[in-house]
Length: 160
Image 1 (spheres, rainbow, N blue to C red):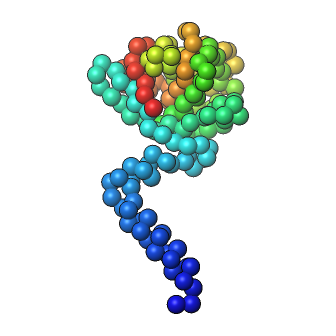
Image 2 (cartoon, rainbow, N blue to C red):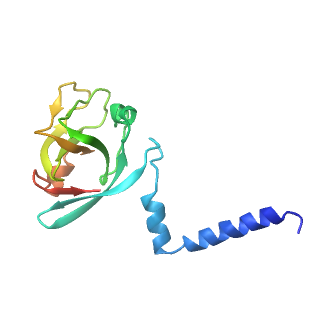
């Protein structure tokens, strides 16, 4: 064989592809996905309301730079998509809609993992601060009206 290293690399790649061809591989690929527009990691997030779970795929705005940009300038988002802003350490949070085209529901998630309050139907481009009630460990942004449509209310559990 002319290129033994190339052949070995091809075999490793083939084995990896075969290992990922089943349901487990699909779950791994989905869990490790990246949003095509933002380049942010996308993870599953579950909101439990009255015993019923609803799963979202959310972008993780982990750094201060990613959090400052958030969903600014975005023109579309799927009904089960959103963005999570982890806060470590937990703190009071205020969000605004500067340069944000999409109307949003902003869910503040308390240190106990439950929705503490919701700023529903935040108006695009509005710079009025929308604040948490108490300390939060994260903030979740969804399409405007989605929380009400799914019956999500303060006290519901959020897991990611």
